[in-house]
Image (cartoon, rainbow, N blue to C red; front, side, top):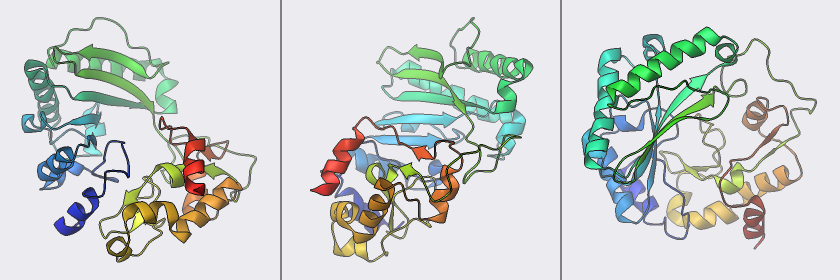
Length: 295
């Protein structure tokens, strides 16, 4: 994305959203040479960053950025090799060094290390035990003692708070299977509903702006197939107008409110959910978005 387009976008954030801003759609955002500049520019406009990263490029210079950090934690050499060419010991040293600096400075960032399990992992106690042994080791490297077992039945595995009020969590997530992702399960999810039926509230709750300035409504569609504007439109109309009033997104919303799933990408994505219903889960009630879209 060009600098001109980036600043054109963030100058319109007020009145558009009070949610944290994500500087990525997929991939590793810390690879961007202007990550610090862009993050600080968003902070200067009163908005927080929501960073999702594999953590391999975290450094203490980022600690004063107002952001929450989700690290997709690799718990083995094999898992890291799928994401990065970094040496595993160097990777752990990078992450633990960031946490140690966060503890020492009393950083207010909230850091989540996401631990992912497949159905095969959850069905094999020895696999979960192997992950738990790594997590004990990882916390030790971070200078945090924890002598209890980890309970994978829930989402929260471990919590810690530093003197500045920032929190650190180990969180458990299930690997998404099916849909736009390669299947990780032997038995794919099935639904009694046809591909043409279903619902997703992302057209009301998500605003994705691609590198060329096109608007889309899905953060899972890494191909940009769900873009509903042309690159020049973002220069001719306010983003808020394009989000709420563009005829193309209005048509998508009308289809979903009638349980019609028109786009092939949406049909494929909803195949991973037996109910064929996806809700983004933001705190704002869905009916308030429907009311706003009808104004």
